[in-house]
Image (tube, rainbow, N blue to C red; front, side):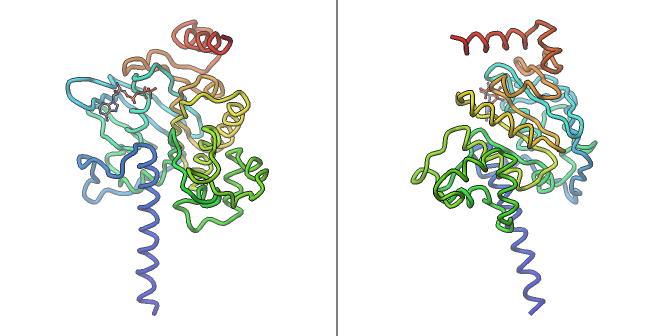
Length: 295
Ligand code: ATP
């Protein structure tokens, strides 16, 4: 019996790993398949994560050869730090996230995690190390419990509640008459953009990845929700390296470092105070957003 059980268990494990990777990818990119050009090298070793330091070295990238999207991006996120990427629509922010997840390979330069070129390690190990919180978390017509646990069948109730607490969604869930058994999604309770994103954050936290990649929801959020998301961002950053693709400046204020991307190039970097003092692009964007909010 043992001889039969072992491989079955193993298959179950592999199946869950693959399914989780697919969930992450499909959520972030709306796609189910990896483009064929991105492949593991023969006998590639797994990524060894030691702190989760991210480095982009002179990264160039284009989706089609006619048009360069990233033009020499250099950036470093030290272990445990949070980096936020801001910049106008189309400047290449999400593309940086896709390259970190190795959905595409850089056309020049390299992306490294803890000193290892991500092209040299298995994609399975890379995807396991990076938790992705997509812009629009896909909710299933099922309970909140199921939606947080999705892809992590082995998670315990305590782990799920802990993740929900860190994502600042636990109190909200508790306030519902059916609590974690509330059905959400198209045919259930419709969650707001901010609530959905927090379910997404809880789902990712359950995976306990050393690196988190958050593609912030573009949808406008009310001040209270905005504040809760900020809290959950701070919580989820504890002990991990975080990269935020930011669409709203209010969430980047606490980031250790902010880079401003324009037309595929980093034009400014520093923390919020430093960048404001610089009175450059970031300060301009900040005052613009303030006056929009005031209007
Ligand atoms: P936003 O803030 O609007 O989300 P962004 O800064 O994240 O924008 P990216 O999504 O990285 O921008 O896109 C950068 C550029 O690359 C855009 O001009 C976009 O049209 C182009 N682009 C994005 N994805 C693809 C793709 N799959 N194929 C071809 N071009 C693409």
